[in-house]
Image (cartoon, rainbow, N blue to C red):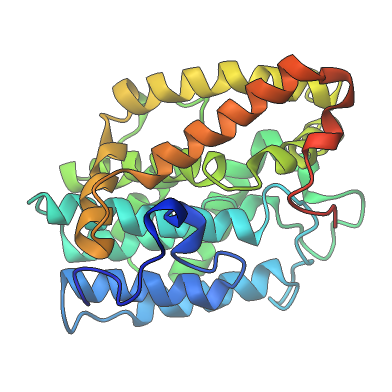
Length: 304
């Protein structure tokens, strides 16, 4: 893999969304494979690639026994956002001289692919959407993952490592309460929790997608918000909590991203932090300017 991109946009155009076509899952997979091989030329990417294609089948309704994904915030796009952020974190740590076990890298990426499969309904679940499982999607996803890993020849030890990593994405589970198998497993879990957070908040359509998140909360009877506007307003506070979680609970692993962008693209900054900052500044802008007509400012994507 080249140390810099063969063709970079101009300085005024370099931002996260220009590097990889995030709306094309195979482009994300291609970049993840490139990152893996940059760390370990000749590495076996088949386990990650096989799981990737199975998860695409799951979200698209082509996996036996399961319905098509019908949630629009926790969708395939969020999963691929998380996957790529995870790969970039791992690469940044590697570039910084952090020793990572090859098996844990594979399992960490598989856990990223599996972290939100609990939103997918079985064919027997006819009512509503997967959003009703907001509060239990972690346990549902872990159950799916256990069956999947056993079916595909992974050990119980591998499963426990993936389970610990996925548990890190649960905001209601304290990190110290999670049993990790090794120090490397703990680092992977914290990276996955960070990838989950920054992958969604750095998305250029994050603010538009918050309207879908409100609908998911509403179906799940999560009564914290009474309107989309309340959720948008509270997102500023949520992101303050996110910064604290990243810095303290997750050990600041998000800072590994700077090493990734410098090594992979020749860009000496953390583009995730920059994108999140831009999203929040825009949110502050229109909430102060015209909160009653907030929908006028959310036009970077159309509702499905």
